[in-house]
Length: 137
Image (cartoon, rainbow, N blue to C red; front, side, top):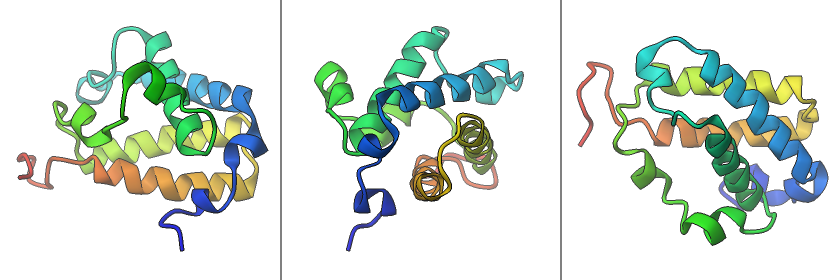
């Protein structure tokens, strides 16, 4: 049994390359419009690179070509995000924007549910600040 339901199907084949680009573009438009410094400050100034990093990672993780790893090496999500103070509120805001983006770009219900399961797990896995706003060990 797979840990995530995204591994039970090939979402890359189902959705296609362009849909992942569209999803990441929609998502990052929301992120870059956010005015909360503690959230917005975690993302690079260059939105295009953020979009590319995300859609390449999503494509690779959802059974498409290994675009991200070929360009940047192993994803190492925790290591790449450890320099940011990520709270539960940040994880929830990220998920809110991603859920909105999935609906707006027309991700089908079944794929959206599978992706949401994965995104929820990863968003909370990357949290490194506890409820008292102190860094977790």
